[in-house]
View (cartoon, one colour):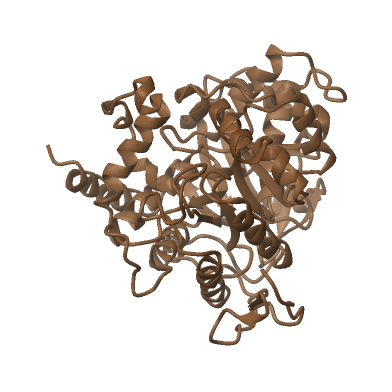
Amino acid sequence: MRGQRNPRDPRTFGGRSVAAEPPPPRVTARPAPVSAAVVQAGVPHGSREGGWLPDAVYTGGKVEQGLAFFADAMGRITRFSREPADLAAARRLQGQLALPGLVNAHSHALHRVLRGRGERHSASPDSGGRRGAEAAAWQEVSLRCHGENIFDAARMAFLEMLLGGVTCVGEFHALHHQPDGSPWPDSNFLAKEILRAAHDVGIRLALLKVAQFRADFRAEPGTGPVRSRSGSVEAWVRDLELLRTAVEREYPVDEIWLGAAPDSLAQVPLEAMKAVASYARTQRLRLHVHVAVTAEENAAGVAEFGRTPLALLAEHGVVDKRFTAVGAIHLSPDEVKLLGTTRAAVCACPGSEMRLGLGVAPVGAMLQSGAGVALGTDTNARIDLLEEARLLDYRLRAGPAPEGLGRDWAAAAFHAATVSGARCLGAPGGALEVGRPADFFTVNLHDPVLAGTDSTALLAAVVEALDRRAIRDVWIGARQRIAAGRHVNHGMIVGRFVDMQRRLWPA
């Protein structure tokens, strides 16, 4: 890309304007809007400070008892207190432990429609194994998915996340066009359906707009699935800028925001990858890329470029503190060190990786190198981020303890599901601290899984054993989204999804 970008004009790229209208002022001072149904549910969010007093709260890296926390009208935590008057004024959460909301850093929400269906396709080595079977099933159903299908599928996936304590998700959005490959009248129509679904449910969303330009390594441009490929970097940038204008006009900055996701070097040739990365850097967007997911991918990268994909990306300055390597399973020790020295992040999806037979990422070595390790649910065959943390915990226990971590594997796994996830998405939450949003979920301390556990072992018990049935309430920005295990629109969301599945998969 040639030309100079005017730093005063965020709508220029490559020396020219990419949006027809000037950007509207960013909305930073109003509370996040919610659907009428949520407002009618009487979710507390007034003009003055409000607070909560659970039996225990996880803050500052430990479980505290007898501690209330308070948030202002914008939903930001203002203080913690043990003062008797504050304890009396706070909303009592009897028998509950409050934990910071989980952050799902990598999701394909639309794959929720495939649950239990990928196995019906051939999983032979010639078809690409289990990963190829999943891809074949997705290609089949994607040809039938239209706008309302996208909305209902995404809303169902986001509801499941909320029910599991997830308060923020990074959605890897790759479906852009109509079933025949032609553009929608609004080129961002399907992305907006994803945004609408997240807003309707009430979850924070980082929409990572996927770029794909070819089918695989050494393939010609313009090959690959017609619903996901982009014609050019310029067209992809133009669509993202138009989407960003709409997002800034319709949503507060901490409810929905955008990121860049050039899928991988297999789908995005080097020059296009560099152009997308340059654009993301100038616009201060997070950059998420699939890297080293399979050994075959690394071999194909070496065959085309003479080096592995991660080494090539680093050589061209793509890997930095805003970069997240998704997968990163088949890395050399030098590549692991590279991620640490560049302060990059890694998003592991242990459940999907095991289900698809992809291998095991060297997460212990990554943590020791200084790379941030986040977690995602990927294909959403199962949506349970605490289970992803549990699998990460098991992987850490299977190897030598990373230097400086000691043996507190559960805390490291929970950190990946919260703080590290928030960092790699540029999200405001991740911890219950002053200045951060009151994004949290509560669990029933009297559930059989936690019964008899003292405060020193509570976090480990949650990571190692908690079932979703024990999650009671979920709050985002001091607004209650889940109450006693149900969403205000619970039945309607599930019912519409059931009807949609019957249409997509007729008997």
